[in-house]
Image (cartoon, rainbow, N blue to C red; front, side):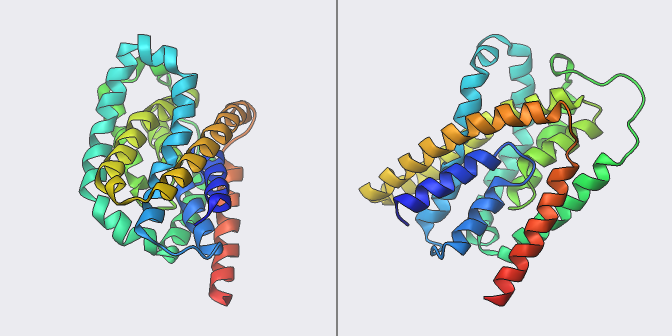
Length: 257
């Protein structure tokens, strides 16, 4: 892995982290296309660099984090199932799931179908919950949905949006809640991986992490603002079709190599 790889993967992470397309899948598949060996450092890079993108959201929502303790408590509740499942499956994810390119492609493809079908459903009746009114049961449900994203290709963003709307939270509210929930989620994931593996990194590898981190931060700042504007006028169906096409194209590419 060199600086170009770190920069490219960091930009890709930032652009896709908050879109319902699975940033982890994009990074893993890009790494395969670039011919990068699946070293322990590369696996750690894939996890840790995501916090660069999350930090962009932390900056955007800093005032809410500092003042809205009601929402913070709901975020803490939502983190519980994600944290428990994530820590329990940490070893499996790095040792097995990160290596299974066909599982990642299948998750991308099936997730695209789910998004398309979800957007064609009849809207439910009754009042939709706004961010300030999310209950603890709804928060726990959203956190449980987010935990599905331990499988590369599922997409943390897609899982929380679909899970939240099924729990009758408004789209605007669940998207914002998803952004906020990403902060403790990726802080825990990146921090845990660094704690376990940083002593084994070479100095040059810390430089690569810094490049990827900064690239992810900048590109995520742009991506989040674009995504919020996009949702004001469009559904998620286009992302579903994108996932399906990408999965089919890459499946054909890997099959023919």
